[in-house]
Length: 504
Image (cartoon, rainbow, N blue to C red; front, side, top):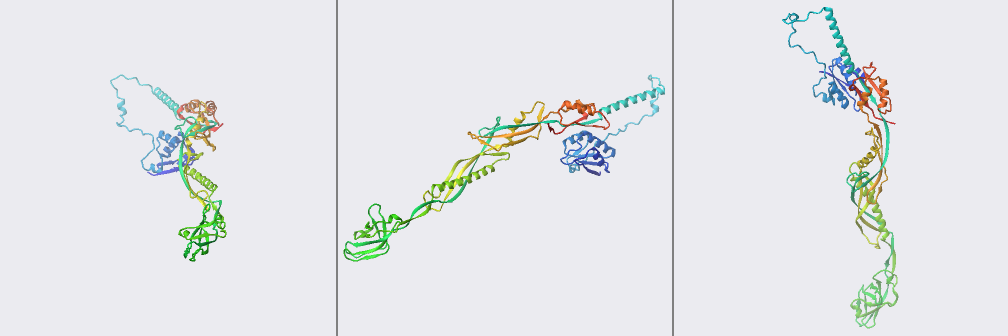
């Protein structure tokens, strides 16, 4: 069977939907509800559309996921599907009026009904009396049907907008890693610990005088045994008073073979620095076996030993490098902790601390000559992770305590704002505040509303409802049929819709 698909818009009402159905030229009509929009949510609207489809001779089905519309359609016998594809996977028909069943036996002949029987019968009444009685029964039945239709068929929709009351509170929350469950304003916290490492290097700033040049001069070797002796290059000579100062010859020489023969040769101090500058006559010892054959002395002072400033490691250099690496690692540790947070947690940044210096290694000691010094530093950083939902639960509990009897928190309209200031207590817990805002709305008993308006005129019902529930605007009341001036007497024929409350 052919079908026609009609898409409803968010602004459609019964009139516009009926006009669209008037264009249908097929035996099956599919009405498609808009996504995210609520139209024709009254049972009365669906009932009227159902009757209009019957007058067109078409079967009607609904494509919708609105639970209210689905419930009304189920009561009316209208098929509903979540999508067009779902409607094509099954055979469907909307409910129609039952036909009069065919008789299983033929109607008896009139003559057989009038045959006299053996029993006694009332005498036949005059024709005018029988006609009058039949007319009276017909009028009574018609009146009863009209009264029943008047009581059952009319329907009404009452839309209420309760008056909301603004609520606001500020609560102090303590997140403690010791506790496991929420206790009043105390909530659990999770300790997150990470280790981070970094290498760094910095230039040295210390200056140190370092020996830069050795003293130089000449010594005289004198033969003691009169033998010819070769004095090799590099022969060592030294002083014997105080701390010895050593010198070495700069070339090889030979002394003549006679007692008292002498020869002069240049020498250079082994260690650089001013300490090698000595007075004349202080060098008097020869290193090695030549000391038994020769004597030595320096008739002139040794000169030229000097120092020069060079960069060296200071304690301040190491402390500066350590502070730089520590600041870098604290930033990296904070990022590492944040990367370990699970969804729904926030980090109490004030609780992030360095809990341990795992390793600290310098490549040079204080005083060592170098242009730079290096450090390898590894630290442990920890902080407290707090569940946002736990903090909001404490704030929501405090907000609910502000709700009076006969009221309730309007769901979905609560707002929570956590203060950025987080204080760390001596126990290791953290303290912060949460501001909660919401709306308290009156509880609407739909049965009481129906009893309050049944059988009343629209104006009487509107005025009467102001005594039943606090409202922010005049109730919107619609009746069907449109020509009725009163709401139905049957409460179940009155649909009560409660809109989102408005602030007082």
